[in-house]
Length: 116
Ligand code: FAD
Image (tube, helix red, strand yellow):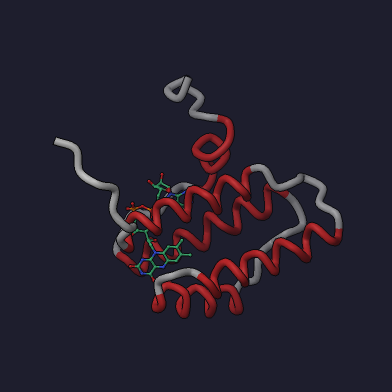
């Protein structure tokens, strides 16, 4: 029996959104232009503003104000986002991710070849 596809619940929306955000950060330029840096700040603010989970959106907006996106380089942005995601993990009682593995998780694949 096949079931119809359903709207995303909060967990699915979160998982899919983090996938998009971390993958965008993983492919952000190492040497962004001033315009790219400004656009990334706007993108994060607008993504958060329209994020369709009200308390997540309110909460993340405050986090963005306290800790604005580090847009100076690919490495800085990927590490910043990892830190932000870890803040949400802590709030939700989830384990923290070791940010030194962020490139393997979201761009290069694991060094043991498990994604090949
Ligand atoms: P997720 O947290 O969705 O993570 C998905 C995958 O990302 C993990 O399997 C892991 O491989 C990887 N990962 C985990 N941590 C990191 C990290 N620090 N850096 C890089 N990769 C990592 N839910 C709420 O209930 N309340 C909220 O206030 C809330 N705020 C949110 C704010 C935003 C901006 C987003 C995108 C989501 C938010 N969510 C919130 C959803 C929540 O964070 C989770 O996405 C959801 O609970 C599903 O969790 P999960 O266990 O599948 O893993």
